[in-house]
Length: 132
Image (cartoon, rainbow, N blue to C red; front, side):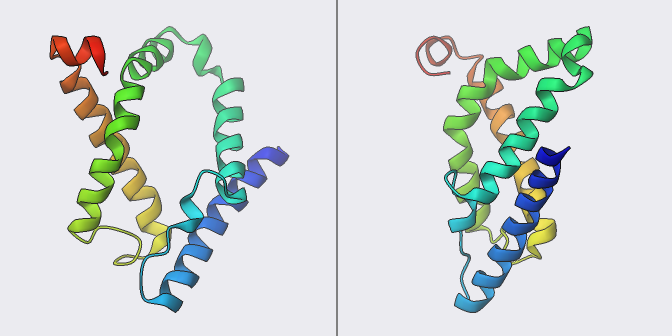
């Protein structure tokens, strides 16, 4: 239970500090999205514990979905930064929208686009063999 409270606290810290420092500097501050920050650590721990101890892993349907997603996860990891930069270039980021909405929405959009791109690239034999 404590780890979930830390996860919520990590999310709130990300939104609050991103908003505060972005408004102060009039530019998007991304330092609170870094993987080595305490807020991201708290949120990552909560997500990991949730999936580790959830009943998803015992359900055949969810297991199939997780295995399918894991096939594309490395490719999604490699390509997500391109989608992130593209969304930034068209002004879809936490600076142009409220961070409390922008952070989860942009995260979901980037995840969907990255996994879809990885799935498409996975259909090309040479890329599937050596990259994805």
